[in-house]
Each structure stands twice: as C-alpha cells, then as structure tokens.
Length: 409
Ligand code: EZ4
Ligand code: CO
Image (cartoon, rainbow, N blue to C red; front, side, top):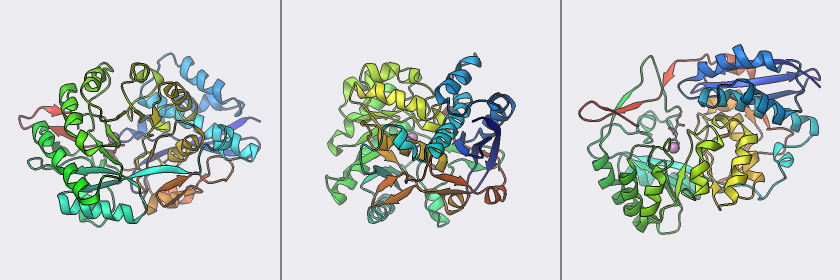
C-alpha cells in the first residue's frame, strides 16, 4: 500500500480546525488533527509546503518510521508548529492502520483496560450563584468530576469563565480565541486571585459536599512561590488537581511547588515532547500528564510518555478543550482506553457546527467517554460541511497588569 495524496483542510465551524487527510492507493483514508489555536495557518503551511510532498509514495503502515523520519530529518526539532504537523501524520496513519485491520485504534494499542473514560467538565460563573448553577447543570448531565473557574473581584475579564458565551446563550467559549485582527486584552491581579480562589472552593464544598472530584486551572499565571501558596491554601478542599500552577519551561520550578503542598499537580498542555516532562516525571514532581495528542506529535509519542510516567505512578489527564478537534480527541480517547495509567479525560463538548463537520463514533454518556468501535479513529470529515465554514482569523486573549506589563494569561 502507498500514500497517493495528503490534503490539508482548514475549516471554522464555531472555531478554526486544521485537519490532514491521507489517501492511499487502495482508497483507504486517514484523518489527523493539526490544530494550533491562534496559529492555525502556520501548521497548515508547514504541512502543505514541507510534509505532504514527503508523504507521497510512502508505506502508510510504517507509522514509527515515518514519525522518526519527519522528526529527525527536519533537523530543527520540537516546537508546537512542527509537532502538531507530525501529530496529524501520526494520527492519520493509525486511522489507516485501524481501517485496514478492521479494528478500532484502541485494539491496536493493546485493547481496552477499562470500559470507558471518566471525564471532567468545565463549570464556571461570574459569581457563586452562577457557578453553582453551572456545577448543577454539569452534574445533571452526568459529569462526575468538575473543573471550577470563577471571576475574581477586582479583575474585569478572566480566562476560563464562559461569561461572554453564557450571556449569548452558548455553553462555552468555543475558542477561547476571539475572532478578529487583534487579541482581546484582559487584566490580571495575582494577589486578588490568591485571596479569592480558596473562598470559592470553600463555598463549593459547603454546597456540594466532600465527594465530587474538583479541579482548577491556574493557566501559568503564578510564580513558583505563589503557586506553592495556592496549593497549600487549597489543601482543605481536597482538589483532584491544580493545573498549570506555574509555567514549566523551567521544570525546576515544580520542585519548589512540590516541597510546599500535597495538592496534586497537573501540567503539560503546551508541551511538545517527552523532554518537556523529563525532570517532572523522573523526580515525581507532578501527578498528571496534561499533553494533548495533537500538540505532542500524535498517539505514538504520547503512549511512550505514559509508559515512562507509569514507572512513577503518574497518570494521564490529556488536554481536551474544544481547540483539540474531534479527531485529536478521538486519538487520545483510544489511547486513554488502552493504557493502564489513565487518570481522567478533560471533555468540553464540541459545538453542533463542529459535530456536523466531524461525524463521530465517539460517545459520551453518564460522564464517560468511549471512542466507539468503528475501525480506525472513528471520525469522518464531512468535506462539504467543512467548506461551508471558511477560516476566520482568531487570536487567544492576553493579560496586562494594572501598570501595563504583559503577563501570562
Ligand atoms: O487555554 O486550549 O485547560 N484548558 C486550557 C485551554 C487553553 C486553550 C488554549 O488554546 O487551559 O482552554
Ligand atoms: Co489548562
């Protein structure tokens, strides 16, 4: 079997997605997700200009060899653009292998280690009553674990609070990149945030009791000592995890956080390769691997990092916002079903428009996700629907402090 074509499809049903479709001489096709939120066209160009020509005539069954070839032959390693492009190829080849074998991809990865994947949903609110309503709604829909984000008095606009969406009757901010020629500017005040967050978790525990696993995303906005302080102040509320409490370009930062708190830590949604996790895993500085198959080079390297993490009792918590397309989500759902050290899967339902473009065998019921049993990844791209949602320029927001300094958002 040979690859005879590879097409890059850019579509924008509620938000932008970049999809690679590989076609073989036997008519089998495979899909891969190459979406890099806010920088989509860079990956589309990397694929079209530099990767697609290299794929033609190759044997689609040689997944590992193709991955190593694309990673090593480029010479210039790593980075989100390169790794999202390689991820799309890797996923598409797993999709093809599954279709040829007549098996869902999780069977090729070792078979199911569980019946389905426990997920967590995103509850948010501008104030406590709005947050409680959002938590109740998620519980009614079957979610068993809940991420909690709220507005903070003194901060006007805050990432993760679906205020704008809720005001217009939408469930989530589907991007959260805003469409338009400039990123939205938001504000930030760490001291106000650190004072407020424990009071929110206290209120949630008082209202909903001790059992529900609760999660929180710090979105890289704290210094290590501020992160340590937050982890410590949240200990009474028994979090499932505190995510991205501080940036991890410097992995040593987590040593400091870890020394001070028993709140479980999750990190890695912006990581590209196993090297970003090397110290964090070996020194047991984290509890959950947040990488997404799409931004980590695909299913193959994500399986390897999870096998490495297993030695240290570290589990998966793969990144699953709506900017990971249904193809990327399916890829990591197959992997999550197969690996022993699965932890939890983030799940933020895609919009109706997105689901029209990406037809899926994946199911979500009673808080659990399953990739379905169709051969391959179980996603079909409706190309006609895709064409009806043309690309729209979009940027993620960013923060400035009161004195005008740019800050992590
Ligand atoms: O801001 O995926 O945990 N989830 C997150 C996400 C990220 C977006 C960036 O594209 O932090 O919502
Ligand atoms: Co996050």
